[in-house]
Length: 477
Image 1 (tube, rainbow, N blue to C red):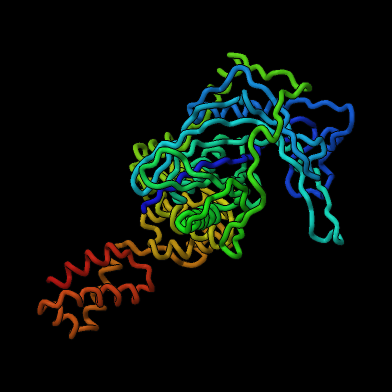
Image 2: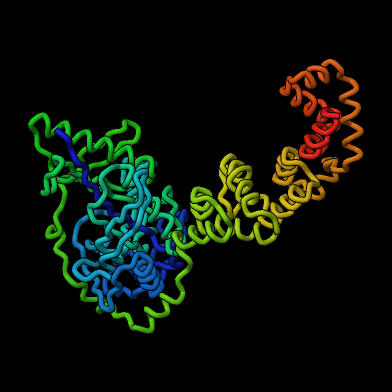
């Protein structure tokens, strides 16, 4: 029997506000436990929530970006459940009336583009964190995260493979970073994913029973978790069993999912409108302001890079993968005044390799865009060869100065004077009569021997293009 996989994703994107969604506590990551929580976060009696307007603005910005309906009126609700790190005994979220509904995201798959529907995106507060390590057998509660603003983004069950799910997540991850509403640091929990996975016989309209895979924090683990869960469900059904609706945890060490608890339904949470918060009403002026402030989005930037800079779809995609990388590239192009393709080759080649090797983001690059532009100008004007330029770049990365300073200090200036190169070439030809005879007898592969000997004699400084040109002329004479 052929099976079809059905996947829907719920993503929690932590919004980049300076303070929490309903209190004035800061949201900086990594502080000592309970140093960024106040009486509102700890649910002291009598305290009231005050909505953070910047979180609302970020949610609206996301809605505009995905072509969704940004509702003029939305409502906060209490989601009731008990957990030690949820002091109020409920989470403030949105249920029946979310701020954003009915959007879409276009992803790129090996078979082409595909549109994934986004059911809704709603604002809510995060819970605290339970600490189990180094607690002497007890569980500690850290409320630093409690009240941190989240945008929960719920997709339609439109994905049909783990690869499609990862493509959707990567596209969404890029988008929220471009919008500057989430830093996307998955290792810090700023971008978390729950995957709802089910299988059904190919051609069947009715959905199968789904399992929810909780809090997966890397693209690689998402793909592995979904692939495992699909295999598990197919094997279970094929053996005559039934898939239970449940929440499962992915164990990356064992590469398997295991049951955590039965999956709750919405009515288990007893949602009702929060009486402490009035309905959220957005004015036309507010929405117009949000639309006017929208940045250039990834798809538009990728298309512009292809047209404006003559880049391939691949290069344009790589260079627009992050807003910061795209800005670096454009800054380098503007400063260098050379072919944009040369800049693209260096940014995606030498620079990307060095950043990856040192574990750095583009914003932390030790060679700034203007400095790289200086090196590329020297390649373009023939001052330094492409091979020597790599040595110059390494020296610049190590902090030895700009391109001109390194070239001068290391004596790497390329010889481009025709007469100087011709003199070296004549000496090489005179010193190798046997190879000259072979070349003139039709053994053209000997040409590379002469090129190598000329470069060696010039200590790698001769302009390779001119070496080839002069060698061809003199060997033929």
